[in-house]
Amino acid sequence: MRAYEPWLDAMTEEQFAQFGLTFGVSGFMLYMLFIIWRLARESKAGKFGTFILFLVLSFGMLGFVAKQVLVWFLAP
Image (tube, rainbow, N blue to C red; front, side, top):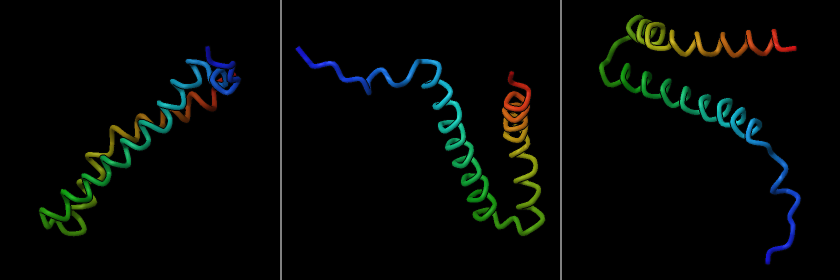
């Protein structure tokens, strides 16, 4: 029988989900930005083309970040 280890009970399921949402999705978004940068570089899009690629393909991520900021500010 294993001894009781208090650090195992240190995080609730809600805290784990919030941690995963915050850092997991943030890491995924950074990876998507890397993919957009690589796509712009390989297609030789130029400065304006790279700007348009980042603007259009990153617009959905901006909405997700804005939602998280609003939830954070309006939370009781």
